[in-house]
Every structure is written in structure tokens, then in C-alpha cells.
Amino acid sequence: MNTIFTTIIALSAIGVISAVLLYIIAQKFRIVEDPRIDEIENVLPKANCGGCGYPGCRNFAEACIKSDNFEIMFCPVGGTSCMSQVAKILGKESAIKEPMVAVIRCNGSRQNRAQKNIYDSAETCRLVHNLFRGESGCQYGCLRLGDCVQSCKFNAMYMDKETGLPVVIEDRCVYCGACVKSCPRKIIELRKKGPRGMRVFVSCINKEKGSVARLNCTAACIACGQCFKICPHNAITIENNLAYISFEKCKLCRKCFSVCPTKAIQEVHFPAKAQKEPLSEIKSS
Image (cartoon, rainbow, N blue to C red; front, top):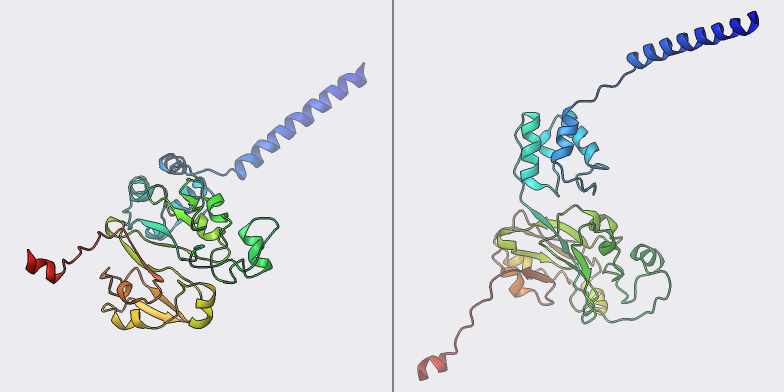
């Protein structure tokens, strides 16, 4: 009987001592979270898309509190209004950023880029990119298998059956950058949306010489330099046989578009130009 009683007392003592030790350790190594993390997380869109550069909205909220330079912190899904609320919680000012949109920098449609090879295996862009140049022979162009569409969490992209190219639904695009990361050939770029959505850009990333590029795609940039010469704003550079238009410098004058011989330069959402009436018809009227 004494043995049982002694055992019970010993076990109880060990339990009490263990509980005290655990409490002391818990207090010593306790991590107190900043309550503002929850406040910031509540105003974020909770998309957890990674467009901010952090793996999830809560991680982004923590980073906002710890960051010494709040101006570089931005949630593309929530936008400026969301960051204004975050800034208010932190007692800081948020920078106003112009909205951006994903742009497909490839005009290698089925009409411009003929099929030269047949691929019959797992249909993912990343796998095909690692295996060969692609069905059209262009090692830089879109592979038309839709990895970018699959990566978009906001249903802002689809594959056009006629052209074989991805299309961005601009009203849904939150410029999170998921499609940019998913494309193994880096044909997708985030560019400023522009006033009323108007933009001018080179829809080609082919770095081969003009004659070679044209063999695989009739709409390829051939680095002829005409756009570079006519641009009055120094917005165009030519490197590695490829022209590029800076959206920071471009003033949307559209002069480059009119001189591009292959129509590699694209202009979107501009109003249609008024057609000039023939002089003979003006005189007769």
C-alpha cells in the first residue's frame, strides 16, 4: 500500500515540476505577434497569388510591418486603394502606382507562323521548351499549350482557337505575374496599362537575325531600325537583333507602328483613324 502511495506522490510531483518547467520555457520563448498583422491581413484580398513577391497574404502583411521602405510594398490584386488602407494601419503614406496588365509579346499566330513539326506527347509548354524549338521552328515564340492560362487564378486568360495564342482579359487581369513566371519562353510582360488602355509595344522577342526570324514567322521583328529612327522620344532601343519600346518613355505617338514593315509593333485600344476622303470625290460634291 505504501509503495502505491509513494508512486502516486512521485508521479504527481514529476507532473507538477514538468508543468512548471514547461510554463517557464513557454514564457521565456514566447513569440508575441504584432496585432497589426491581423489588421493588415483583413484588408488584403486574400488571393494568396504571390504577385507581391511573398508566399501568401499573411507573409506580405508581416513584411509590410518589417519593411524599412514601405513604398516598394505593393499588392497588385488589391491595388492602390488596398495599399492606402494598409498604410493607414501603419501610419504611413502609400505610393500611387499606375495599373499594369499582362501583355503577350508574340504575334506568331497560325497565320503568321506555319507548322513545320508535329509534337505528340505531354502537352505543357515547359516540357516542349526543354525538348525542341517548337512546331513552327521558332525557338522564341509562344508554344500555344496554355501553361499561362492554367497558372492564372483569376480567369483572366484564354487560348484563342483561331490564332493559337493566349489572350488576356484586361478587366480581370490583376497583374500578379503568375503567367509571366509560368511561361518558359518569357513572352509575357507586365506593362503599364496606359491611358484608356492604350499601349504600343513590340510583339516579338525573337533575337535571331532578320532573315532567319522571317523564315519562321512573317510577323517577326527584323531589327531594321526604322522604328528607332522615327521615334522622337528615345523610347526605342535595339539590342540582339530585337527592338524594344520602353513604356516609361513612350508617348503613344504611334509613329513607329506606321513604319514597321512586318507589323511586329502592335497598338491596342486606340480610336480608329479617320479615313481621308479622296480629292476627286470632294471636288465632285
